[in-house]
Image 1 (cartoon, rainbow over the protein chains, first blue to last red):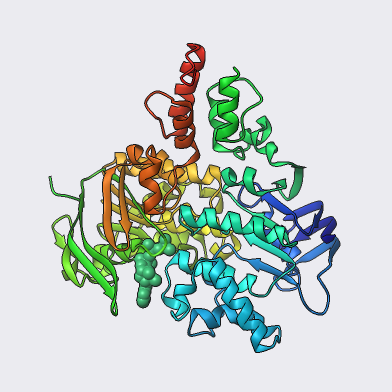
Image 2 (spheres, rainbow over the protein chains, first blue to last red):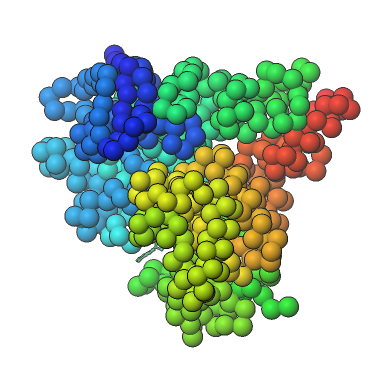
Length: 266
Length: 276
Ligand SMILES: Nc1ncnc2c1ncn2[C@@H]1O[C@H](COP(=O)(O)OP(=O)(O)OP(=O)(O)O)[C@@H](O)[C@H]1O
Ligand SMILES: [Mg+2]
């Protein structure tokens, strides 16, 4: 079922004339992973803030169009956002990682047993159970990013919004995160992720939204990331970009596996 | 010639948790090193030691002929330009230009010299259009670039950068790469902490890999990226270009995009199909 729908949404930050989002329409269903790609400032982070009901409610500004979110009801299954700078998202109220991850669920007023179950599961999924007694302020960048993600997942949101979730993760951690994104979708959650890790998307995204100057310029399958126009805009996968730069004919391969296939049949 | 940076059996612990154990290496002028490793491997700790924010528990760190033990961070800043992992939170001036000027001004340069250095640093990163903006009106990626410009404006002999490209798009990563190559060509040594191995492949030449606080490897970066079985146990994975070169058997196992594109074009034109 549709979790989030945006209809002709435009958004202006306070004291600005140019919209950060311009006439964007998008529907995202449970079970789906939608990736937002674009240059810095193209509107991906803004779209996530709008989807999270933080813009304009918290950041101010002005919105036109319709944003409709349908959770699971009973105050459960809301929406959770992971910001691009995890260190700005620490509650500052917890002395241990476990309490930090429990902060969100505790605010939902859940019974203790339910909190414990979700916190322990989230810590395990992010591979940070060993950090549970650590003080959040002393964690490394990547450790903290995992803790913040765990804190969001512990609230069991029906719509999960990720802004550059792998920015601080090591390559093995990034692969773990992308697998986790797929398994969240498999559980029926709707996932929207803004990322510059384009090479990960063929295996992760069901759809890709190309944003440019606040507009959804193109929406389609991840194969978009091998199209000439996206490569030219700096949004091709590395394999497609190399193929194109080498002057080889279209279609460009999207992944290493595609390249091997094309190379064999040339 | 003296090394730009030399670590001699450096160890450090937070309380009773060892973060670095007997790390030794040296960087010459103009050398471009990537400091790699898993989350929690000790990379940022090493940055804190080199910039004088923390002192080694054992061993010593030399910045040219200065023992960092004898120098407070503000003095080390004459030779070491740095950028921290949370750099986008560390801007405090009202405009990007003021923020970038802070370092050279604090070093006591005259106003015209400050202005020139700031101009060069902003230009190197293509930030001129944002010079008059308030840092917090910009997206985090641009704040990061502003912090990097602040380090570049010191025109230091050693640049130590913690995750300079996290969250940057392709065009911005390319700007960072070219600015760093320019500084290295002018003789600055680079020590760059990064998880972005594609960026590292484009920009850096030497791989220093930390594994649970120990220096697990110190060798040419391109060779390491072309050897997936060696990357895996270090928590690393080959970037897509290295994987492509390997899968197609491209001659020279290129890891940079431009090199791979050239190799691909040559093989395609010669109708030599390495896989057949
Ligand atoms: N103030 C502190 N007190 C206790 N432990 C700390 C402190 N700061 C860092 N650590 C621990 O020291 C180890 C090294 O941390 P460091 O920040 O150097 O890692 P890193 O390699 O930079 O990791 P990342 O890639 O995640 O940024 C980690 O296990 C971290 O949890
Ligand atoms: Mg770090």
